[in-house]
Image 1 (cartoon, rainbow, N blue to C red):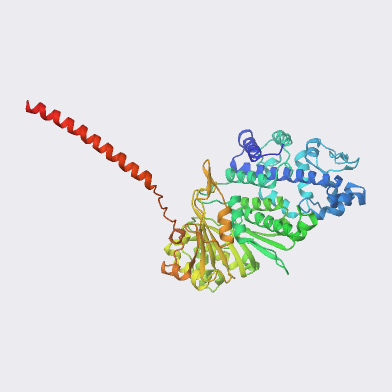
Image 2: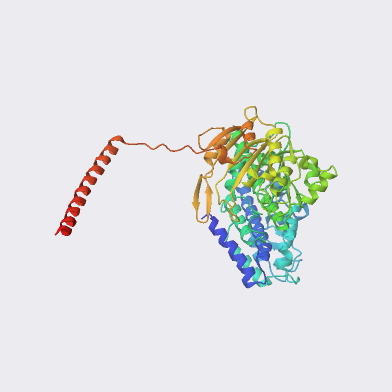
Length: 567
């Protein structure tokens, strides 16, 4: 039976409890153990699942390779580059077949001269390990992956120091860690048993619950899937006919926007080809026409984002920068990608008391970073606009962006000058969409989409398309689930519907001092009461009869009282 979100969430809690209750750790340590071990188990289970395709005639690509070479190790050697997320270094080819059961079977006090048998049972081939225990063997497997980023992710999360008995920062004893490995053996995290959307949601639940807290207004890690899906559908990205498109998230967190972006492109190309599923080769070919770019300042967020990209097979198409997007822009992401991005998708931090205003002010005074500060330097408390201006600076002349921002960005007086430039002088604001409230795990703050387009269509020039989707939700306990279909359709097709969506001219926005509040322009039509004349006349007659009856009763009472006082 396939795992559900609740199943994997329960697994998250179990791992965290082992660290916090049985071990010597806290929530931060739970992140450092839970994320790596779940990613590691996911990778091995997905690879085990993938190995089976070489023996399945229904998967012709892999099956034909196996028939050609007649040996699994040779087939892997000649084909593994088509699934780079699993690939190993040439000198570590024997580790490609290692799976979770091999770790459990690994003997303590192992003699490196003694060969080991694979648990997959495909043949009698043996392999060697230089490790002497299970912890060392796990590190050896991690080191065998061809993608350097995998090792980097585990290093960023200090995984080895938390489980290695030679480190004073160890939080689980060796035996406790082995018990955790045994427990995990009861979970199959392959794609067939734990689909990407289920695993990603549970993975994000782990980030939300156990990441270091930075204030209730900062949804640092995770943009809910409904928000990313709706935003990307409204953006409607497409591959270039003659080059590579560059998609960027300069405040990437867990990279939910970019993973969803890539999956949207894959699906669109799949539909063009008229296929039910893309082959490995086709998927790889499409991925090579995309360049993903991220920057994130928080160490754990950065590792979490790279992990998410890895699990979607996108890490080798990603250029990643670890650093502050405001203060380290010109030496990191901006140095290479300013003015080069086809698409930017972002959910930047909200409510910062100071985003880095000193850096921005000094840069502008020195004639630097004018692509983003040429609009003016936002006040210290207007960090959302600092990020919006950064996003716009990254866009190419034909670039488009979707940005999740709080409602204050639509009307705050302190950023009216920037809004005037974007709306009137540049005509880059294509759309504003008001979202339902309570969509996030970490904050109830209401948000909206800003859709920026530096190359608006003739239909959109000189106006902005507004959508009020605030009531399109289903209540789910303490949060809401956005029903995205209507908002997406009305925006993509520019359907004007009274009380829901409409075009507004820049001249009209100008008369409102560049206030972009959706409620100013999308006013709900007043419901006209339908009156049933016959029923109303009957009601009037009934009221008359009641009044006459009451009048007679009152008269009777009055006469009785009068007679008493007359006696």
